[in-house]
Amino acid sequence: MTQPTTVPGQFDLVAPAHRFTQGGRYVYSFVLDLPTLDRLLPERVDERVAKAEGANRPLTLSHAKKIQEYLEKEDRWLFGTFLMGISPDVVEFDPWQDTDRAVVAGQLRILSVGDIKIFDGQHRRRAIRDTLESLSQNRRRGDKLASLQEASVPVMLYAEPEIDALRQMFSDAAQTKRIETNTVAQFDSRDAFNRATEQLLEISEFLRGRVEKERSTVARSSPNIIAINQLAAALKVIEIGVKGRVSKELNSQYLTNVDQLVDQCHVWSDEFMPAAREEYDNLLSGEIDNSEIPEMRSHTMAFNATVIRILAGCYYEWVKDGADWKPLADFIRNASLKPGAISNALLVDAGVVLPGGISPIGRQAQVVGAVDYIVRQARDASK
Image (cartoon, rainbow, N blue to C red; front, top):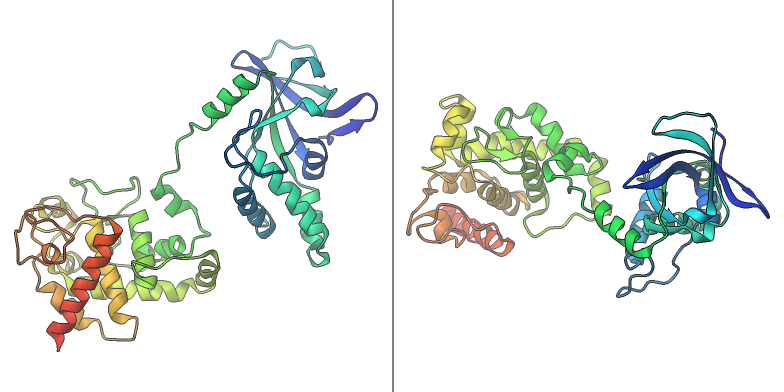
C-alpha cells in the first residue's frame, strides 16, 4: 500500500483508505507513518489540568511521558487506533471501483488537515512528537529512530464537525470494559511476578490445579484456593513484603533473574505453606481433595486470599534476614483460623477479623498490622 503523501497547494493529505459508515457518519480508515502524523496533525503543547479544549480532555504531560518512555524502550510496541473528526466539507474520496459493498476502498484527499480534531489519541500524539525529537538528538539511538520513522499507526477519521458530538464520541469510546486483573496476570509478561507465577504453576505440586484463572476472585463454591492475579500479588509480598512497592527499575532487575524468584516462591508454596497449616498439608498429601475445599471454608479461613497474603507477608518478615522459617510455620499451624470466633483465634487477636467475623478485612492497614502481630507472637513463642 502506498504511503500518505502531501500535495502542496492542492491537498494537505492524500492517502489510500477504506470508507464505511458508522453511527450514520462516513468513516475513513487509513494509516499514517509517525513522521507524517507528527508533521500534519494538530497537537496541544501546554498542559492545562483543569481545562478541556475542543474535543479533548485535559492534557496530562505525565501521561504522555509514560507513553514516550514505553515507545522508546519497547521494540515490539503497540498503539491503538487514533480516533479523529473532520468536517465533511474538506474531504474528498474517490472509490477505485463501482461497488455497492458497505466498505469501499479508494483514495482519500483532505484539503485542510488543520480541520482535524483528535478526540482519542492526543497523549499518544504528544508522545510521538517528543520521542522523535528526543531520539533525533541522541546519535546512539539512530537505529531506534530509523525504526520509528518507518512505523505507522492506524487512524479512524469520522466525518463529524461538531465538537459536542466528538466529545460524546470520546465518552462513548471510553466505555470499554477494563481488562480484568486475572487476564493481566496471564497476559502481561513484562511483569516479573506474572512471569514467576506462570513458571511456579508448572512446578508447584501444592498449587497445581488449585488456582482460579477464569475469575479475579475465588467463589466460595470453587475448588480452587486462590485466583491467579491474587497469587501474583502474593509472590510480590513474599519478595518485598506487604509494605513494599515494585518500581519499573526493580521490576527490570527481577526480570533478569526470574528463576531465582521462582525458587524462593516455590519454597513458600510447597514447603512453608504445608508446614504452616494442616489444611494445606492434607491437600498436598492427598488426604483431602479439591472437591472438599468448598465445605472446608465454613470451618477454616485458610482458603481466603487475604489470609494467604498475610502468610506471605509473615514469611517475608521472618526470612528476610536469613532466619529458618520452621518456628514461624509451627506457630501458625497450632493457631486457630476458625470463622466466627470471639477470641483465642489468631486473626481475631491480630485485628484483621472482627470478633465473630467469618472473613478478614483486606485493607492494607489491617493486613500490615496482622503480619506484625503474628511475627511478633511467633518470635516470642520460639524463644
